Length: 282
Image (cartoon, rainbow, N blue to C red; front, side):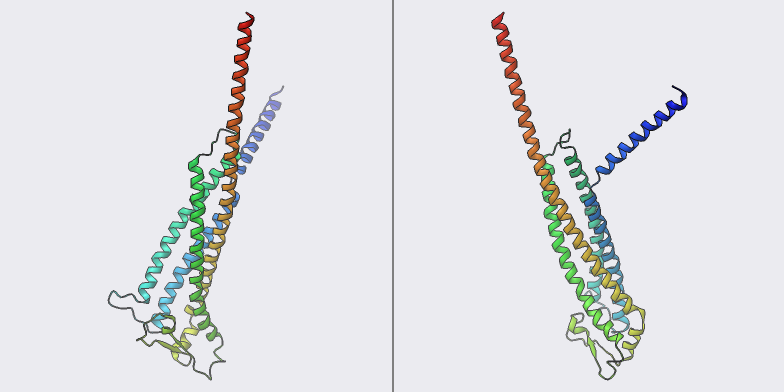
């Protein structure tokens, strides 16, 4: 065999080994969990980023056009609530970043356990408990995101009314419509903060970019919350399927253990009888 033929043969073996290694790695990726994680990260990023900027735009609109002043004392006014919501957004972004990583790790371990069912990998009771815990936790988070989605629709509805009125200013020139912040619970009953269509502040607000940008940011935040709900539902389906597979795998392991034990006992019985026959013959 020549040197060129030997090098070519070694290259073919190396390519085959690389292909087998790549296929093995790709077969171990939990694609369903990966899709759900990407959807979760996209939804949480959209909700947190757009929600944070929309709250900042709301502060600007309230202070500039509705003449709402921040309370000098430590009172629970609308600006304090907005600051609290911003801190909540920071916590949600960090918490679900970690939770997405945990679910991906759980998906990798479960996929490996199912793939190596007949190998050396053993599914422990702790693993089954962790899977059940993730199912329960994901269900709770899904309900929480449903509440967040419903809550996020309130500012979208409020801004849509104002934005729609600004888009149809020619239709409401004859009638003087007013937006009272007391209707939405933004200010207390004793404060009168109105903005009427005939006022100069309303015309400036409609001509500015703050209203249009803030409204569309709240719409994007609502879409992000909806994407997070879909991701949680996707995770529930994945975790439930993994739980069913793991449960069947555990039953299969028990069956294999009992079968091997019985075969070992039969082998021992046959060996004992063979020895007894041999002793009796001798």
